[in-house]
Amino acid sequence: MSNLIKRDLLLSFYSSANFFFTVSFFILVLILIPFAFGTQTDQLKNLFKGVVWIALALSIIITVDRIFNADYEDGNLDIIMQKNKTIEYLIISKYITHWFIYCLPLLVILPILSFLFYLDYSETIQIFINLFIGSFGMVFIANFVSALTLGARRTIFLKAIIMIPLFVPFIIFGSDAGSWPILLALSMLSFVISIYVTAYGLRLYGE
Amino acid sequence: MNELKTENLSCKRGENAVLNNVNFSIKSGETLVVKGRNGSGKTTLLRILSNFITSYEGKVMFNDISIREDSLYNSKFNLIGQKNSLKENLSIKKNFDLWDILFNEALDHVKLLKHNNLYHLINRDVGSLSDGQKKYISLHRLNYKKYDLWFLDEPFVYLDEVNTHLLIKKINQFNENMGIVILTSNINLPKNFHKEINI
Image (cartoon, rainbow over all chains, first blue to last red; front, side):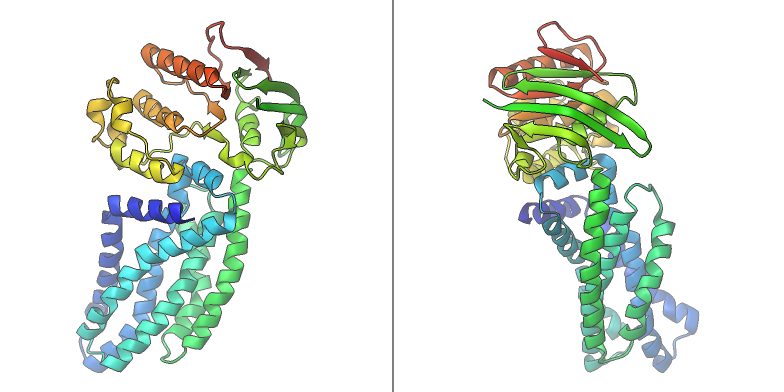
Protein backbone atom coordinates (compact mmCIF):
# COMPACT_ATOMS: atom_id res chain seq x y z
CA MET A 1 0.00 0.00 0.00
CA SER A 2 2.69 2.48 0.97
CA ASN A 3 4.68 1.52 -2.13
CA LEU A 4 1.83 2.46 -4.40
CA ILE A 5 1.40 5.79 -2.63
CA LYS A 6 5.12 6.47 -2.94
CA ARG A 7 5.11 5.52 -6.60
CA ASP A 8 2.08 7.67 -7.44
CA LEU A 9 3.57 10.66 -5.66
CA LEU A 10 6.86 10.21 -7.50
CA LEU A 11 5.00 9.86 -10.79
CA SER A 12 3.13 13.09 -10.22
CA PHE A 13 6.34 14.78 -9.15
CA TYR A 14 8.04 13.64 -12.37
CA SER A 15 5.19 14.91 -14.49
CA SER A 16 4.61 17.89 -12.27
CA ALA A 17 3.01 19.87 -15.07
CA ASN A 18 -0.19 17.92 -14.36
CA PHE A 19 -0.46 19.29 -10.94
CA PHE A 20 0.12 22.90 -11.91
CA PHE A 21 -2.47 22.48 -14.65
CA THR A 22 -5.24 21.65 -12.19
CA VAL A 23 -4.36 24.53 -9.88
CA SER A 24 -4.25 27.00 -12.76
CA PHE A 25 -7.47 25.57 -14.17
CA PHE A 26 -9.15 26.04 -10.79
CA ILE A 27 -7.94 29.63 -10.52
CA LEU A 28 -8.95 30.46 -14.08
CA VAL A 29 -12.50 29.14 -13.66
CA LEU A 30 -12.91 31.34 -10.59
CA ILE A 31 -11.41 34.34 -12.31
CA LEU A 32 -14.14 34.05 -14.93
CA ILE A 33 -16.77 35.09 -12.34
CA PRO A 34 -16.02 38.83 -12.35
CA PHE A 35 -15.82 38.78 -16.14
CA ALA A 36 -19.23 37.16 -16.41
CA PHE A 37 -21.09 38.88 -13.60
CA GLY A 38 -19.40 42.23 -13.05
CA THR A 39 -17.34 43.36 -10.11
CA GLN A 40 -19.86 44.46 -7.48
CA THR A 41 -18.49 43.19 -4.21
CA ASP A 42 -21.59 41.71 -2.59
CA GLN A 43 -22.59 39.79 -5.64
CA LEU A 44 -19.05 38.46 -6.09
CA LYS A 45 -18.93 37.09 -2.59
CA ASN A 46 -22.08 35.04 -2.99
CA LEU A 47 -21.16 33.84 -6.45
CA PHE A 48 -17.74 32.77 -5.26
CA LYS A 49 -19.23 30.49 -2.60
CA GLY A 50 -21.13 28.57 -5.27
CA VAL A 51 -18.74 28.70 -8.19
CA VAL A 52 -15.85 27.41 -6.11
CA TRP A 53 -17.72 24.09 -6.00
CA ILE A 54 -18.21 24.08 -9.75
CA ALA A 55 -14.51 24.79 -10.15
CA LEU A 56 -13.63 21.92 -7.83
CA ALA A 57 -15.99 19.57 -9.68
CA LEU A 58 -14.48 20.51 -13.04
CA SER A 59 -10.93 20.12 -11.72
CA ILE A 60 -11.73 16.63 -10.50
CA ILE A 61 -13.39 15.74 -13.80
CA ILE A 62 -10.32 16.72 -15.83
CA THR A 63 -8.05 14.59 -13.64
CA VAL A 64 -10.22 11.48 -13.62
CA ASP A 65 -8.27 9.87 -16.47
CA ARG A 66 -5.13 9.79 -14.36
CA ILE A 67 -6.51 7.58 -11.62
CA PHE A 68 -6.66 4.18 -13.31
CA ASN A 69 -6.87 4.83 -17.05
CA ALA A 70 -3.30 6.00 -17.58
CA ASP A 71 -1.93 2.92 -15.83
CA TYR A 72 -4.40 0.70 -17.63
CA GLU A 73 -3.41 1.93 -21.08
CA ASP A 74 0.33 1.46 -20.63
CA GLY A 75 0.00 -1.84 -18.74
CA ASN A 76 1.20 -0.71 -15.31
CA LEU A 77 -2.16 -1.64 -13.80
CA ASP A 78 -1.21 -5.32 -14.21
CA ILE A 79 1.85 -4.83 -12.04
CA ILE A 80 -0.07 -2.74 -9.51
CA MET A 81 -2.83 -5.33 -9.21
CA GLN A 82 -0.38 -8.18 -8.93
CA LYS A 83 1.59 -6.49 -6.16
CA ASN A 84 -1.46 -5.42 -4.18
CA LYS A 85 -3.47 -8.58 -3.77
CA THR A 86 -5.82 -6.94 -1.27
CA ILE A 87 -7.62 -4.77 -3.74
CA GLU A 88 -9.16 -2.53 -1.04
CA TYR A 89 -5.71 -1.36 0.07
CA LEU A 90 -4.91 -0.52 -3.53
CA ILE A 91 -8.09 1.54 -3.80
CA ILE A 92 -7.53 3.38 -0.54
CA SER A 93 -4.01 4.33 -1.58
CA LYS A 94 -5.43 5.64 -4.85
CA TYR A 95 -7.92 7.77 -2.87
CA ILE A 96 -5.15 9.16 -0.74
CA THR A 97 -2.84 10.03 -3.62
CA HIS A 98 -5.56 11.42 -5.84
CA TRP A 99 -6.79 13.68 -3.07
CA PHE A 100 -3.28 14.66 -2.08
CA ILE A 101 -2.12 15.47 -5.61
CA TYR A 102 -5.19 17.12 -7.08
CA CYS A 103 -7.34 18.44 -4.20
CA LEU A 104 -4.85 19.55 -1.59
CA PRO A 105 -3.24 22.17 -3.89
CA LEU A 106 -6.67 23.63 -4.56
CA LEU A 107 -7.37 23.90 -0.83
CA VAL A 108 -4.01 25.54 -0.27
CA ILE A 109 -4.71 28.16 -2.90
CA LEU A 110 -8.30 28.74 -1.69
CA PRO A 111 -7.59 31.30 1.10
CA ILE A 112 -5.70 33.50 -1.36
CA LEU A 113 -8.56 33.36 -3.84
CA SER A 114 -11.21 34.10 -1.22
CA PHE A 115 -9.17 37.08 -0.13
CA LEU A 116 -9.31 38.35 -3.71
CA PHE A 117 -13.09 37.99 -3.63
CA TYR A 118 -13.40 40.08 -0.41
CA LEU A 119 -14.45 37.18 1.80
CA ASP A 120 -13.65 37.70 5.44
CA TYR A 121 -11.80 35.36 7.74
CA SER A 122 -14.77 33.41 9.13
CA GLU A 123 -16.40 32.94 5.71
CA THR A 124 -13.14 31.62 4.31
CA ILE A 125 -12.84 29.12 7.13
CA GLN A 126 -16.38 27.88 6.51
CA ILE A 127 -15.80 27.40 2.78
CA PHE A 128 -12.50 25.72 3.51
CA ILE A 129 -14.07 23.23 5.91
CA ASN A 130 -16.89 22.46 3.48
CA LEU A 131 -14.52 22.00 0.56
CA PHE A 132 -12.13 19.92 2.63
CA ILE A 133 -14.84 17.47 3.61
CA GLY A 134 -16.72 17.51 0.31
CA SER A 135 -13.61 17.02 -1.82
CA PHE A 136 -13.06 13.58 -0.28
CA GLY A 137 -16.52 12.48 -1.34
CA MET A 138 -15.96 13.78 -4.85
CA VAL A 139 -12.63 11.95 -5.07
CA PHE A 140 -14.36 8.70 -4.04
CA ILE A 141 -16.91 9.18 -6.80
CA ALA A 142 -14.23 10.00 -9.38
CA ASN A 143 -12.36 6.81 -8.45
CA PHE A 144 -15.24 4.47 -9.02
CA VAL A 145 -16.23 6.15 -12.26
CA SER A 146 -12.65 5.77 -13.42
CA ALA A 147 -12.59 2.08 -12.48
CA LEU A 148 -15.92 1.35 -14.14
CA THR A 149 -14.98 2.96 -17.45
CA LEU A 150 -11.54 1.36 -17.70
CA GLY A 151 -12.02 -0.36 -21.02
CA ALA A 152 -13.37 2.74 -22.73
CA ARG A 153 -10.61 4.92 -24.09
CA ARG A 154 -10.65 8.70 -24.25
CA THR A 155 -14.16 8.99 -22.89
CA ILE A 156 -13.82 12.05 -20.71
CA PHE A 157 -17.28 13.19 -21.84
CA LEU A 158 -18.91 9.93 -20.79
CA LYS A 159 -17.19 10.16 -17.43
CA ALA A 160 -18.26 13.79 -16.98
CA ILE A 161 -21.87 12.84 -17.78
CA ILE A 162 -21.77 10.10 -15.15
CA MET A 163 -20.00 12.21 -12.56
CA ILE A 164 -21.80 15.57 -12.72
CA PRO A 165 -25.18 14.26 -11.46
CA LEU A 166 -23.38 12.48 -8.64
CA PHE A 167 -21.67 15.73 -7.67
CA VAL A 168 -24.98 17.61 -7.44
CA PRO A 169 -25.67 16.81 -3.74
CA PHE A 170 -22.21 18.07 -2.80
CA ILE A 171 -22.77 21.30 -4.71
CA ILE A 172 -26.25 21.83 -3.23
CA PHE A 173 -25.11 21.47 0.35
CA GLY A 174 -21.60 22.74 -0.15
CA SER A 175 -22.48 26.36 -0.74
CA ASP A 176 -24.36 26.62 2.58
CA ALA A 177 -22.19 27.68 5.46
CA GLY A 178 -22.30 25.25 8.36
CA SER A 179 -23.57 22.31 6.34
CA TRP A 180 -20.42 20.32 6.90
CA PRO A 181 -22.18 17.49 8.81
CA ILE A 182 -24.29 16.76 5.71
CA LEU A 183 -21.18 16.84 3.53
CA LEU A 184 -19.45 14.51 5.93
CA ALA A 185 -22.39 12.12 5.70
CA LEU A 186 -22.34 12.33 1.90
CA SER A 187 -18.61 11.69 1.82
CA MET A 188 -18.89 8.67 4.08
CA LEU A 189 -21.74 7.31 2.03
CA SER A 190 -19.79 7.70 -1.18
CA PHE A 191 -16.79 6.02 0.45
CA VAL A 192 -18.85 2.93 1.23
CA ILE A 193 -20.34 2.77 -2.25
CA SER A 194 -17.13 3.70 -3.99
CA ILE A 195 -14.86 1.12 -2.39
CA TYR A 196 -17.29 -1.63 -3.35
CA VAL A 197 -17.89 -0.43 -6.92
CA THR A 198 -14.21 0.36 -7.58
CA ALA A 199 -13.22 -3.12 -6.45
CA TYR A 200 -15.86 -4.57 -8.74
CA GLY A 201 -14.61 -2.49 -11.68
CA LEU A 202 -11.00 -3.51 -11.13
CA ARG A 203 -11.85 -7.20 -10.78
CA LEU A 204 -13.84 -6.97 -13.98
CA TYR A 205 -10.80 -5.50 -15.67
CA GLY A 206 -8.70 -8.45 -14.57
CA GLU A 207 -11.03 -10.84 -16.33
CA MET B 1 11.57 -28.01 -6.75
CA ASN B 2 8.55 -26.15 -8.04
CA GLU B 3 5.90 -27.48 -10.34
CA LEU B 4 3.14 -25.70 -12.20
CA LYS B 5 0.50 -27.78 -13.87
CA THR B 6 -2.95 -27.50 -15.37
CA GLU B 7 -5.60 -30.18 -15.53
CA ASN B 8 -8.36 -29.99 -18.13
CA LEU B 9 -8.21 -26.21 -18.19
CA SER B 10 -11.06 -24.67 -20.19
CA CYS B 11 -12.12 -21.07 -20.40
CA LYS B 12 -14.91 -19.18 -22.09
CA ARG B 13 -14.73 -15.53 -23.10
CA GLY B 14 -18.31 -14.43 -23.62
CA GLU B 15 -19.81 -17.00 -26.00
CA ASN B 16 -16.54 -18.35 -27.36
CA ALA B 17 -14.59 -21.15 -25.79
CA VAL B 18 -10.99 -20.04 -26.13
CA LEU B 19 -9.23 -22.73 -24.16
CA ASN B 20 -10.28 -26.34 -24.39
CA ASN B 21 -8.81 -28.97 -22.10
CA VAL B 22 -5.31 -27.61 -21.80
CA ASN B 23 -3.03 -29.98 -19.92
CA PHE B 24 0.59 -29.40 -19.17
CA SER B 25 3.01 -29.72 -16.33
CA ILE B 26 6.27 -27.88 -15.99
CA LYS B 27 9.01 -28.15 -13.39
CA SER B 28 11.82 -25.95 -12.12
CA GLY B 29 14.42 -25.28 -14.79
CA GLU B 30 12.08 -25.79 -17.73
CA THR B 31 10.65 -23.54 -20.40
CA LEU B 32 7.27 -23.98 -22.01
CA VAL B 33 6.57 -22.38 -25.37
CA VAL B 34 2.86 -21.88 -26.03
CA LYS B 35 2.01 -21.82 -29.71
CA GLY B 36 -1.26 -21.20 -31.43
CA ARG B 37 -3.09 -19.13 -33.97
CA ASN B 38 -4.13 -15.53 -33.40
CA GLY B 39 -7.02 -15.45 -30.94
CA SER B 40 -6.49 -19.04 -29.84
CA GLY B 41 -6.16 -17.96 -26.20
CA LYS B 42 -2.43 -17.69 -25.57
CA THR B 43 -2.77 -14.41 -23.71
CA THR B 44 -5.85 -15.72 -21.90
CA LEU B 45 -3.80 -18.69 -20.72
CA LEU B 46 -1.10 -16.40 -19.31
CA ARG B 47 -3.71 -14.22 -17.63
CA ILE B 48 -5.25 -17.31 -16.03
CA LEU B 49 -1.84 -18.44 -14.83
CA SER B 50 -1.25 -14.99 -13.32
CA ASN B 51 -4.57 -15.04 -11.45
CA PHE B 52 -6.16 -12.17 -13.36
CA ILE B 53 -8.86 -14.37 -14.85
CA THR B 54 -10.39 -16.48 -12.13
CA SER B 55 -13.49 -17.88 -13.82
CA TYR B 56 -12.38 -21.04 -15.60
CA GLU B 57 -12.99 -24.74 -15.45
CA GLY B 58 -10.35 -27.26 -14.53
CA LYS B 59 -7.39 -26.89 -12.24
CA VAL B 60 -4.25 -24.81 -12.15
CA MET B 61 -1.90 -26.01 -9.43
CA PHE B 62 1.39 -24.63 -8.20
CA ASN B 63 3.13 -27.18 -6.00
CA ASP B 64 -0.20 -29.02 -5.70
CA ILE B 65 -2.07 -26.00 -4.33
CA SER B 66 -4.67 -24.32 -6.50
CA ILE B 67 -3.35 -20.88 -7.48
CA ARG B 68 -6.69 -19.30 -6.64
CA GLU B 69 -6.24 -20.35 -3.02
CA ASP B 70 -2.51 -19.82 -2.65
CA SER B 71 -2.13 -16.37 -1.10
CA LEU B 72 1.63 -16.30 -1.69
CA TYR B 73 1.44 -17.23 -5.37
CA ASN B 74 1.05 -13.65 -6.58
CA SER B 75 4.48 -12.70 -5.33
CA LYS B 76 6.12 -15.61 -7.15
CA PHE B 77 5.66 -14.72 -10.80
CA ASN B 78 6.76 -11.90 -13.04
CA LEU B 79 4.35 -11.24 -15.90
CA ILE B 80 5.54 -9.30 -18.93
CA GLY B 81 2.43 -8.57 -20.96
CA GLN B 82 2.13 -7.18 -24.46
CA LYS B 83 1.88 -3.64 -23.14
CA ASN B 84 5.19 -2.12 -22.20
CA SER B 85 4.28 -0.65 -18.80
CA LEU B 86 6.27 2.45 -19.67
CA LYS B 87 5.19 6.06 -19.23
CA GLU B 88 5.74 7.62 -22.65
CA ASN B 89 6.29 11.15 -21.35
CA LEU B 90 9.04 10.18 -18.91
CA SER B 91 12.65 9.22 -19.50
CA ILE B 92 13.87 5.62 -19.29
CA LYS B 93 15.60 6.38 -16.03
CA LYS B 94 12.48 7.82 -14.40
CA ASN B 95 10.47 4.81 -15.57
CA PHE B 96 13.04 2.57 -13.90
CA ASP B 97 12.65 4.57 -10.68
CA LEU B 98 8.89 4.02 -10.75
CA TRP B 99 9.35 0.27 -11.32
CA ASP B 100 11.85 0.03 -8.49
CA ILE B 101 9.20 1.27 -6.10
CA LEU B 102 6.48 -0.99 -7.50
CA PHE B 103 8.71 -4.07 -7.48
CA ASN B 104 10.12 -3.07 -4.10
CA GLU B 105 13.66 -3.76 -5.22
CA ALA B 106 16.36 -1.25 -6.13
CA LEU B 107 18.28 -2.42 -9.20
CA ASP B 108 21.51 -1.00 -10.53
CA HIS B 109 20.02 -0.18 -13.91
CA VAL B 110 23.07 1.70 -15.11
CA LYS B 111 25.24 -1.35 -14.66
CA LEU B 112 22.69 -3.65 -16.28
CA LEU B 113 22.25 -1.48 -19.35
CA LYS B 114 25.88 -0.48 -19.67
CA HIS B 115 26.78 -2.91 -22.46
CA ASN B 116 23.65 -2.30 -24.44
CA ASN B 117 23.36 0.35 -27.11
CA LEU B 118 20.39 1.78 -25.22
CA TYR B 119 22.63 3.01 -22.45
CA HIS B 120 23.23 6.45 -23.94
CA LEU B 121 19.45 6.95 -24.33
CA ILE B 122 18.73 6.55 -20.64
CA ASN B 123 17.68 10.17 -20.23
CA ARG B 124 15.55 10.27 -23.38
CA ASP B 125 11.76 10.20 -23.22
CA VAL B 126 10.33 6.77 -23.88
CA GLY B 127 7.93 8.27 -26.42
CA SER B 128 10.84 9.05 -28.73
CA LEU B 129 12.14 5.46 -28.84
CA SER B 130 11.32 2.88 -31.50
CA ASP B 131 8.95 -0.01 -30.76
CA GLY B 132 11.84 -2.45 -30.55
CA GLN B 133 13.72 -0.27 -28.09
CA LYS B 134 10.59 0.10 -25.97
CA LYS B 135 10.13 -3.67 -25.98
CA TYR B 136 13.71 -4.24 -24.89
CA ILE B 137 13.39 -1.67 -22.09
CA SER B 138 10.12 -3.28 -21.06
CA LEU B 139 11.87 -6.68 -20.78
CA HIS B 140 14.30 -5.04 -18.40
CA ARG B 141 11.78 -5.96 -15.68
CA LEU B 142 13.13 -9.51 -15.88
CA ASN B 143 16.12 -8.34 -13.89
CA TYR B 144 14.05 -8.14 -10.73
CA LYS B 145 15.27 -11.15 -8.87
CA LYS B 146 12.94 -12.73 -6.42
CA TYR B 147 10.66 -14.63 -8.80
CA ASP B 148 10.24 -18.35 -9.47
CA LEU B 149 8.14 -17.99 -12.60
CA TRP B 150 8.29 -15.80 -15.68
CA PHE B 151 5.25 -15.39 -17.91
CA LEU B 152 6.22 -13.70 -21.15
CA ASP B 153 3.57 -12.70 -23.65
CA GLU B 154 5.09 -12.46 -27.15
CA PRO B 155 8.48 -11.32 -25.84
CA PHE B 156 10.25 -11.55 -29.20
CA VAL B 157 7.96 -9.21 -31.11
CA TYR B 158 9.87 -6.15 -32.44
CA LEU B 159 13.21 -7.39 -31.09
CA ASP B 160 16.20 -7.47 -33.44
CA GLU B 161 18.51 -10.47 -33.80
CA VAL B 162 21.01 -9.35 -31.16
CA ASN B 163 18.38 -8.62 -28.55
CA THR B 164 16.53 -11.86 -29.34
CA HIS B 165 19.73 -13.76 -28.59
CA LEU B 166 20.24 -11.78 -25.41
CA LEU B 167 16.73 -12.64 -24.28
CA ILE B 168 17.17 -16.35 -25.08
CA LYS B 169 20.40 -16.31 -23.12
CA LYS B 170 18.63 -14.66 -20.20
CA ILE B 171 15.88 -17.27 -20.26
CA ASN B 172 18.44 -20.07 -20.30
CA GLN B 173 20.24 -18.52 -17.36
CA PHE B 174 16.98 -18.24 -15.45
CA ASN B 175 16.30 -21.92 -16.20
CA GLU B 176 19.73 -22.84 -14.88
CA ASN B 177 18.80 -21.08 -11.64
CA MET B 178 15.74 -23.34 -11.44
CA GLY B 179 13.26 -20.80 -12.74
CA ILE B 180 10.17 -21.71 -14.74
CA VAL B 181 9.41 -19.81 -17.95
CA ILE B 182 6.18 -19.88 -19.90
CA LEU B 183 6.18 -17.83 -23.07
CA THR B 184 3.89 -17.39 -26.02
CA SER B 185 5.48 -17.06 -29.39
CA ASN B 186 4.98 -18.18 -32.93
CA ILE B 187 8.54 -17.89 -34.12
CA ASN B 188 10.74 -20.95 -34.35
CA LEU B 189 12.99 -20.98 -31.35
CA PRO B 190 16.23 -22.94 -30.99
CA LYS B 191 15.88 -26.62 -30.17
CA ASN B 192 17.18 -26.28 -26.65
CA PHE B 193 13.86 -24.84 -25.51
CA HIS B 194 12.39 -27.63 -23.51
CA LYS B 195 8.70 -28.03 -24.17
CA GLU B 196 6.09 -26.88 -26.60
CA ILE B 197 2.31 -27.01 -26.59
CA ASN B 198 -0.19 -26.03 -29.21
CA ILE B 199 -3.49 -24.56 -28.18
